[in-house]
Length: 306
Image (cartoon, rainbow, N blue to C red; front, side):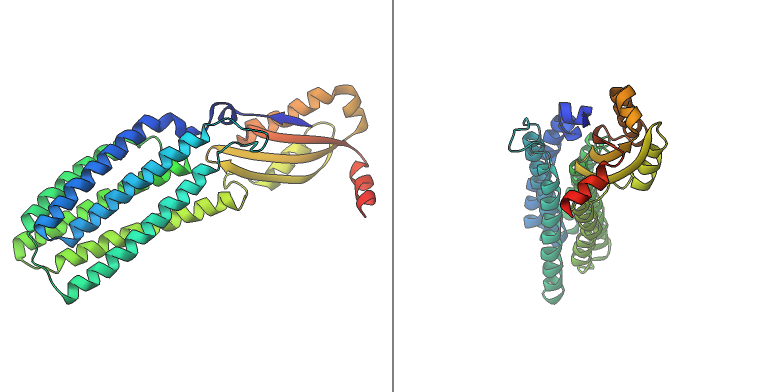
């Protein structure tokens, strides 16, 4: 058998390169939360308080992401051969569950505001929301390159993006109250903030579930992988082909390849290198395990277990 270990396995997960940016994002989200809570208490705005809660989940969620990244950098052990890479995916799930909890709270509170209206200071609501939007734009800029590299970092980016969109909703609500005095704009803005959370939470849970259920990576077609391997000189058959993802940026593949007896005798090492190069170059799978078998081996193994 041959093993090909890629740079992700050697140097840690992709998320580790963005640790400093995550720290800055946590600081920004925490500052926004404090300012928005104070502003919400003074202005009486539920939308501002909902946005503050969302900012808090940003800070907590990104902190979870940072903690997961730190754990993921720990070296593998004989008991945990892939180390703690999968912790990043669990962190993404927790982020999504936090978002769902915020959505339920916002919706419930907004319904209560319709039944018992509260006088809201639209001017202060607007001013604080503008400051929150500006801070969120900085957070988005910090994570702009990270969102396509890691599921964990994608969750952090989407949380900040959702919070920025929430700030826009608060700004619109504050303007409506400031210009017309229509107080219902505040709980309506709160509901908009809650609805912005739903698709992000769903997408994060869906993608995390694919990794946890060890589904084949979306950009890998195992039928095409099989066809490529069968084209290699000396290959007779391919079976027990499996592909899954350990964590973002670390797809893994294992396969049994049946080859002609002469190929094993004449160039075992060369054949193995060609097969692993095929998987690595065509499908960007740097961590692969290939087991070479002579013709008739599979039938003999089936007979033993039959």
